[in-house]
Length: 167
Image 1 (cartoon, helix red, strand yellow):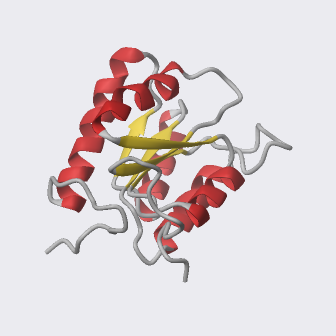
Image 2: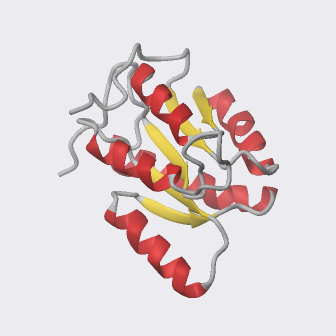
């Protein structure tokens, strides 16, 4: 079983955030979120494909993950949306699985329910709509704060620490 993002460790921040996004279209929130979190010591590791995210997980300790469910598996077929669910599966199998926020793309209500249920079954801590603008960043920041409170008891993890067990 993989070691939970147990690669070389810190990037200089107090918390490593895996930030995956379907990079084939511009997403202002993806650019602004790292800038907002960096002054607090959060290092954002960005991935535009499932393969890039998998490599980051192998080489860095991940404390929290944001997974775009519309993420392509690789850059050969950017329209294939199988990278996001596969990334959730990979994160769930880690020995120290980080809290994960799934970002769902716009869909019909039936597809939306299936997407939500699948993400929660695969271990997502929360599922949010893909932010449409800077105002939606507040929702993402609140969810990340809840994940930190729940999985790290409101404390920043140390460089080599996985989240403590929740009782």
